[in-house]
Amino acid sequence: MKRLAIISSLFIGIFAFAQGIKFEDGNFASVLAKAKKENKLIFIDAYASWCAPCKLMVKNIFPLKNVGDYYNSHFINTKIDMEKGEGIELQKKYNVKVFPTYLFIDPNGEAVHRTVGYVEEKDFIQFAKDAEDPNKKLAALKQKFESGEKDPEFLKNLANLTLYSDIDFTAKVMDRYFKQKKELDKEDVQMLLAGTQSTASPLYKTFEEKKADVIKFFPEQYKNIEKNIKLNGIAQKAYNADTKNWDENYFLTETQKFLSKEESEKIFKRMKANRALKNKDVSLYEKLILELYQDYSTASSGELNSLAWNFFENVNNKASLEKAIAWAQESVKKDQSYANTDTLANLYNKVGDKKNAKIWAETSIELAKSKGQDPSDTEKLLKSL
Image (cartoon, one colour):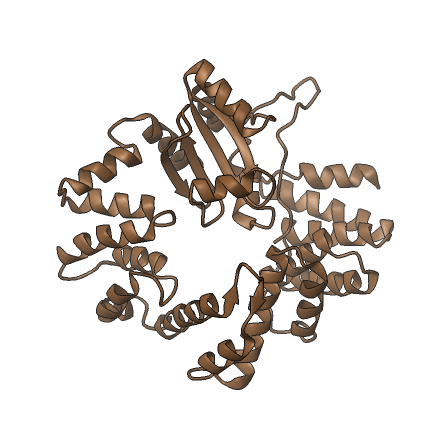
């Protein structure tokens, strides 16, 4: 997806002022020291450079005044890339498995609360308040569960809090929750699906048992849901994270038990490309994506924009960037937005076409303002042209 990151900075001008969350620049040890000195919790935005929801939070939520007012006065705030430097060890220590993850750490370095994903302003502030409430901290909630608490709302809340950090514990919580319910509602099913990402999940058995409930709310999507769960399970076995190698034969053999040969090979190539990007193997990512999208007529506007932006951020080969421009143009043709026009402007600038870069930057800024979006990144680009 196109870059949407905004770095909190001081804007100098008559009406401009800094707002939003102020993040510390030092390492984690210095942040811990400051937290101890001020007797505050630490808020960590645990992110990855490739994570689209992370960038959306940076653009849409972190700069908000109400968010900044609360977080700056109550916490020591820091942003840590979990795939670089000290973030690698912190990712292991705090069991960060999805991005973004938001951690609240006490001055002794213990995690007391967490959540994940894109969170709207009101919920993001409420979540921070919960982190300071002794009765709502994760450790207290887990202890309450172990004491035998069976209240359905309590169990649902706890399951959602632990879903992406402790799936085995979440499975126990959901098991107790589902045993009390003869029928699942749509929210229950969505919670179950969020936890059942593969056949290796401890919730997969529950998914199979509740098949009728899933089909009830997602009759048209059920086959794809089941297919994706199976695919993820096979992919987990086929990919060796230590060696960064794929067992292609295993993947293709297992997936062709329920997919056509063509679909199996295409999905494998796409998974391999996505993993290559995460592993910073840009040349392999570039090669695979160019092969996959020789014909991009059926790809959605959002998909094309995402590919084009990934090429802008990572690829330097001019011929490949020209291909990315074609993807961005098609994205604009299908559904013009601030996002894809900004992508197009940046791509034109990268290949040295200042004239078209200026045209699309101006278009992008106009679109952003008409939708109440912040075009500051694009305005910065326009000033540089």
